[in-house]
Length: 117
Image (cartoon, rainbow, N blue to C red; front, side):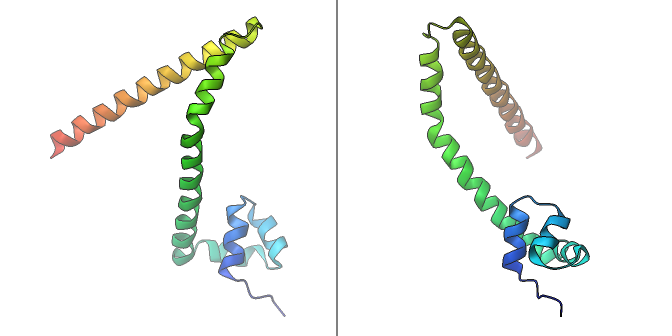
């Protein structure tokens, strides 16, 4: 008798980034069953909501530790190891440039949205 596939089990399996074949094997169902269920609009909505919650939590953790990461990079600027100093300086410059670019893009988008309204 075929095993009944619970949405919760499928959701957990999908969130662990496995292939459909791996999901089917783990859950004891066919790949066709997995494929059919993951393309169901109701399941897709639930999956998207759970994935967003996970990503939001991860983003919050990254942001809350970013100051600590900056402090580490700044300390490395005074390292006795020349390569370490170079790498820290390069990373700081890269991150600064990325920030400036992102800020510029956001400002441009804001201006475009204002023009649209």
